Amino acid sequence: MPFVNVSFLSPRTRVGAVAWAIGLAASAAWAGPKAVVVEPIHLEIGEVEPGQPQKFEWTLRNDGDAVLSIESLEPTCYCTTGKADTWSIAAGQSTKVHVNVDPSDWVGEIVKGVEIETNDPDNKKLLLEVKMKVRPGIAVVPPELDFGPVGAGGSMPLHVDIKAAKERPFKIVSLAADAPFVSVDQEPVQTDDRVGVKLNVKIAPGVTPGPFTSKIVVQTDDASRPRIEVPVRGSGPGGLKVTPDRLTFDAASAGAEVGVITVSGGKDLKVTGAKSATPGLEAAVQPQPDGSYQVHVKLGAGVKAGRLLGKLGISTSDATQPEIVVPVMGLVK
Image 1: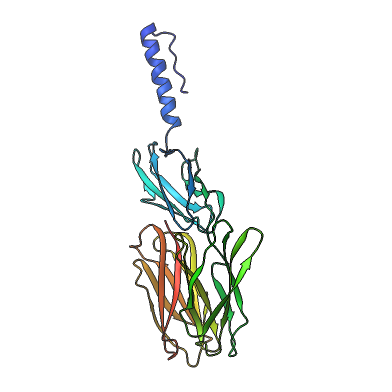
Image 2: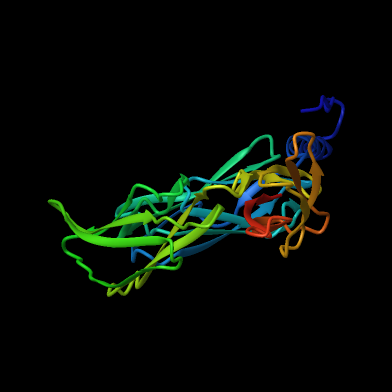
């Protein structure tokens, strides 16, 4: 508190001077951004059905006298996503923080949420959490299959378990792959507390050259998960090699480079262009001395803040792979 000599003042004036000094000290202490979550940061919502994503919303208010910046918004689990309406909050203003939780892969009591990091020095991190109890449902383990490089003779089988608690059995109504070179069959699975099926998936001879993506489609009689899709990917013999085959990035701002994709292989390879239908996602192609190409991916000036899920199309001179599609995902600040 600032020093104020009040000994010579009248009693009434002395009281006013002391109040002014206290107010001045409090004002100095509160200078800067101040992050306040309006609603309770911990919620309990009881029982939920598996396969039914849950949506929540909090209000983040700036009670300080400087701009409050959200520096990161990190989910506590892969099943959770978070998004803010704006990343900069003026003094006295607020923004909404939206949190989605997909409980499909869980059974029983879970606690999920997001951690907000701000520039408030006294309240740097805020954890928004939701506690729920997920009813027994269908679990898919693993949720996707990556065969990696596949030879001309095909692949060894990989397996996916689709199972549920015994008190909630289900039936497979139909099972199919969406590519002719992917084969799948099933066999029953039963443990002390689970029932279901094991999918045996193989890549047959005749797979397309270079990277491929496909999926297994499972129809069930379970109301919460009537349709299950299991992504399948890998790379057939010959053709082009793309590294990485999917591009992910942490929180990045507009104008930032978020990754480099390398395309190599093939005969007299030429990468003729790269573009995306996703607004704010840009790419530039650079040939390399070894004959490969690098595709530099960046966020454009007009990209919107929040979760970005897009695809990048890379055009090539290879007749078997005239376009390579690379998924791009990350968080835009």
